[in-house]
Amino acid sequence: MDIKAYIKEVGQRARGAALAMARAETKVKDKAVLAIAASLEHHVGDLFDANRRDLEAGNRRGLDAAMVERLELTQRSISAMADGLRQVARLPDPVGQISDLNYQPSGIQVGRMRVPLGVICIIYESRPNVTADAAGLCLKSGNAAILRGGSEAIHSNQAIAACIHRGLKEAGLPVDAVQLIGTTDRAAVGELLRMKDCIDVIVPRGGKGLIERITREAKVPTIKHLHGVCHVYIDDKTIIDKAVAIAFNAKAQRFGTCNTMETLLVAEAVAKPVLQKLGAMFREAGVEIRGCDATRAILPDAVPATEEDWPTEYLAPILSVRVVKGLDEAINHIRQYGSQHTDSIVTEDISRARRFLTEVDSSSVMVNASTRLADGYEYGLGAEVGISTDKLHARGPVGLEGLTSQKFIVIGDGHVRE
Image (cartoon, rainbow, N blue to C red; front, top):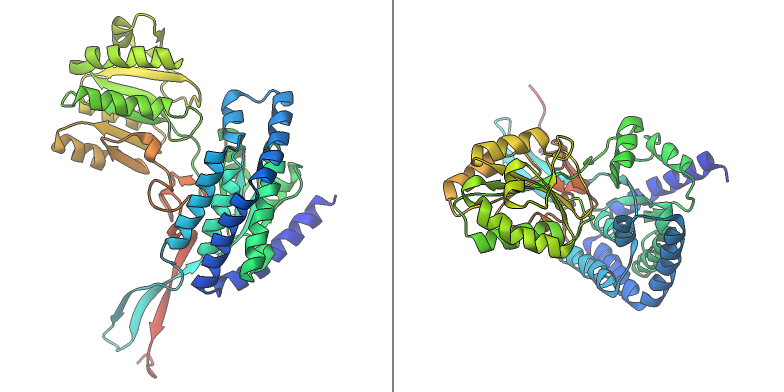
């Protein structure tokens, strides 16, 4: 295959489809999204068969447990994809919304209209659900999508893409509005990163190595986060059972996600009762604790934490634990070692909660909630194409609004400038 020619053709077809998507009516876009959801549920057998091929190939290649977990499709995950698409269809269409329309001294009206970004390229690894999530969000926001999944999920992604194309055809929209790159050749990624004439924005979802490469090589704007070093801080003014439940869920609900807690910070005044309870729970769940000296005084079986542990995203059943004097030390730790992804405080003190919300500079900051809730579906966005820790354009889970921009509109009646 001539990779350069193939990717160029994909880009040109996407650019053409983006014009059709930009003018598509809301009811047509919703029809496509709902038809995709129905197709996923109708073709569950095809999805399982394709996913089985990927899992078998992954086992032969020796994929690690976290990668296999992200790769596997289950009845629950397929239902979640369909439910997410239906939630997207129920959301208000941002395209064409006009805001801040006001008269100016000259008599003209000036406002802003929300418009699609155009062609969005999502480059991702492992998780086949991204194929459906990204397609639904891009279609509802009036964009065309180019999807490049990882080689480990090629068959699963192709089966999901077939469902997407059925939905587009049923709604009378161009199938080129969502294109899955059909080659696993890594050279295709390099071509996509340079295609600034056809692609408006690239969203990488995957490991740190993938995102670093895209950040380094891309000639197209990106929406990204490098890694998720998420924290939960348990304050001394807390309800211990509540704090224990939140911290355990933040780590043990799933190990291999970017919103999983990687470091637990505990105020020294409640460290003993909190860590004794959590230590037993994490031990039973198979989580290795790497603790500071104060942590190890309470949990003697904890592994000594090193300086390298605090900024590490494990994506595995490993947890760093540090006992701190209080809120100030916790905030300073997060500033030094965090990745500006998601951080949470567990406290019954409203003043401390407000300080944490104000002073922790992350894309999601939480009070009395598990970091695992930092997710487009949980935030009411239907799904997400990724989570951004950038500060420009989009921040946090990127849903419909994050896939649009605004342009100024001016309404006059023969007005000219004097």
